[in-house]
Image (cartoon, rainbow, N blue to C red; front, top):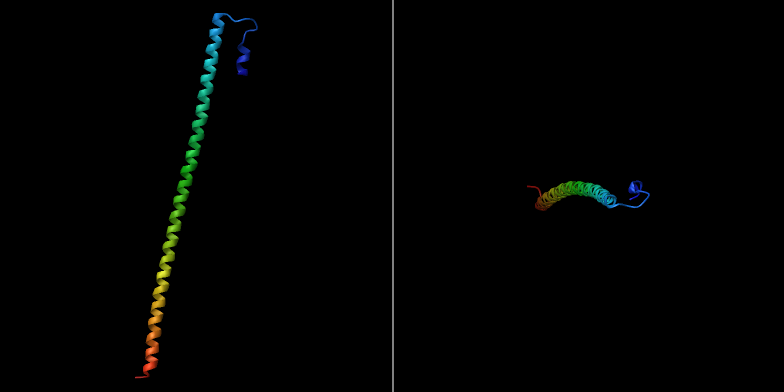
Length: 102
């Protein structure tokens, strides 16, 4: 409102002067409102961009975690298959040793 102080006449106001002053005040308030809305919208846009970026990073992290979990599961299956093969070979070796040489 300090910007408007320079426009105030030093003496009294006439009807035209009061009307003109009201028009200036309304125009000032409309411009200030427009600037506030623009700043508000820009802040919303920045917040939405940050949220979108965070969602993309979260999705990428979840995909990496899923890939790592699949690798762990595959390694467990391979270990179990190797343990099963080892157990089978140990049983065959025990049976071979128990039966004696042919």
